[in-house]
Length: 307
Image (tube, rainbow, N blue to C red):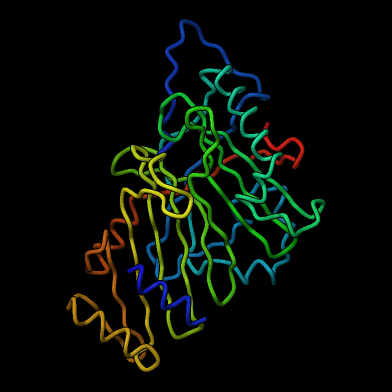
């Protein structure tokens, strides 16, 4: 599948709910709170799986993109609210939160922005920054989910972690949108395994001739084992939509290794889970286990990025 994606490009906490066993009921101040969450379902039509990053940003940022610009990067799929467990991200260890905040801030202010968000070539006053602290793998430490919006074009998101006192870039994604597609990170609830996960999702297009979709779930158990370019995934979903005439050679290569595919008058479709070709129904059923968790991101500044 990686080979297929490279050809197309050439053409054109789970955050587990933190359970605090406190002797008395005590709330954490808003200053330390990671915010409220809600869950929305993922549409099954994942052959076009890029959604506008601005839709996942705070409501008060919805005016950043005009309707025309927003439609250029919008996913063709839609999401609707569903009944799902209520989530409340609690800060069980303010000391751990404060330590993580300090380490991430130092990292970002000392070259980290360029490393994960690629903002070096932009005027800083054009950058909008959104952050959310979470314990994705349930180890008591905090990962940082960070997104940027640069003008009307640059949209980046990244997941950072702290290993042995050093900040590590766990995953990055760029939502380029438009005819070439793009990718982004999505914090999701995995209903099959009852846990929260971070998902790298989106697609790569070559105009109307080819489209490859990806929906990769980062492994919580091996969250720190990979690199920002090659994270460790617990499950990988891939989809292909190829024009019968323009992509005939690529289609022929797939037909050599599998007979699990479908065709219509114009396009060829094939779906994979962990490198194994599957029927579309099985692919869609697996995708439906995941629901996006809407987060109350903190709109910070480059000088003070974290709440």
